Amino acid sequence: MAAVMVGQFHARDAEGRIYPVHEFQESTLQADGNAVGAPIVTYRLAIGDRVNHLGENRFELVASGVELIRVP
Image (cartoon, rainbow, N blue to C red; front, side, top):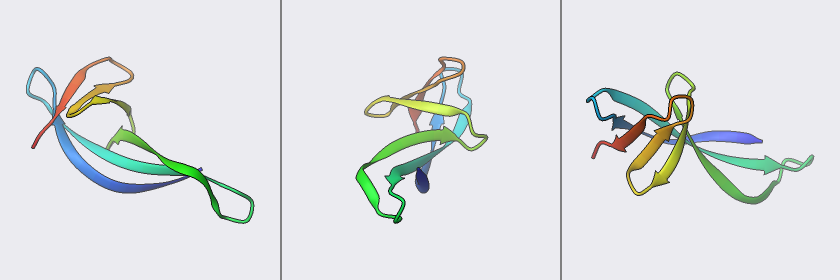
């Protein structure tokens, strides 16, 4: 898999803390270097923690379950 950062934004938790979130597109590559299938979008904090997209502007930290809202 090859991952390319395609965006970044900030998200806030219920206590007001701000988290920098990076958006990646990952694609599976064949041996010849060609992509297979549609890219998969994943999210991670700047420090590497995984983030799940819950829909619209809502996200969740995988490790702790803290819900985040994207800052406009």
